[in-house]
Image 1 (tube, rainbow, N blue to C red):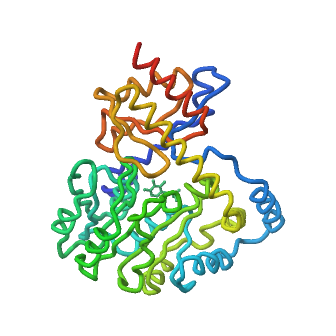
Image 2: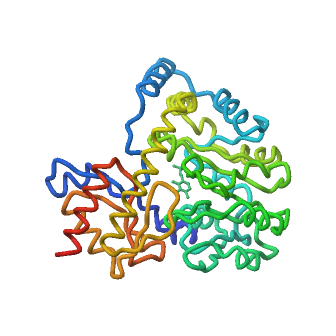
Image 3: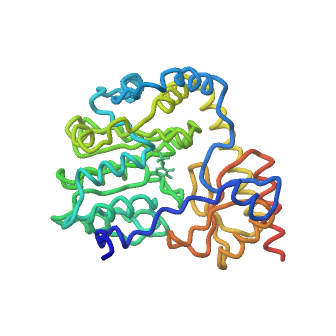
Length: 363
Ligand SMILES: *Cc1c(COP(=O)(O)O)cnc(C)c1O
């Protein structure tokens, strides 16, 4: 007799990470590969982060601080909230999962937008809840449509601001009026994974509204602007009431001691953030200009990536780029079969990508 997994677990499609550099080198026998596939930082971690990890390694014979006390205190101070309002996760994906475990399940549903971040459907389906996917308008969130989709079984709404793989963002006044209209018994997750990278004046810091909405959870991460996705640290900021629920379903010791030390060091290194922002602004410009010169349309983008429309199937172009040692990200699984997503790299990496793309499109 075979085992009997839950039907909704058996029906899941596992998350597909971007292809790794080592994988491609092995497959094609290449010695040099450029990876612009996973919205990672092109800048290597600062020595201070490495020394913090090294120092923390002295305590590896002990369990980590299960409450991430120091990191929590620093984040609370920066967000102007109480430590009891912070939930630290093994990446912000872990926080999204905790939200699903605490508030979703069979008979309940979550509302989110078409083309939205891949983890929302995964977290929702993993706990047997229904995903109500609201068709996008012009690739972006249809917030009125999302409000209309909320029913008595809706317990969570996910809003990616900005979204990924389409990098559009919802301006401050629009998002606030949305929050005012969502019933107060529905958890609203505002995913701000790219928050620190975004300079637009009407882009909101959603934590400013925590005093008004006990059902709001703002998620942030060390994976993007802080440039240490390898450590897996993210966090949620919410009311204490919601944080206490998330804490009930949080795995004990979910963030290891090396990761906690790295995140603390990253917070202390604000100049690293400035370097990252400067590289990103210049890189977005370089990529936008280069794509435009090739007659390609970039979708709105204010993260550290650009999704662009090829006007034809993306997969063969993705494969052509691979053969030239450049890894980008196909986004057909997001309902965008004619597009590819490229992450901002260093200037010469961006240039090499644009050159390889030109060659592939001319083949
Ligand atoms: C990258 C990304 C995250 C971050 O995930 P981590 O688990 O923190 O690495 C979350 N949401 C969106 C929309 C993202 O693009």
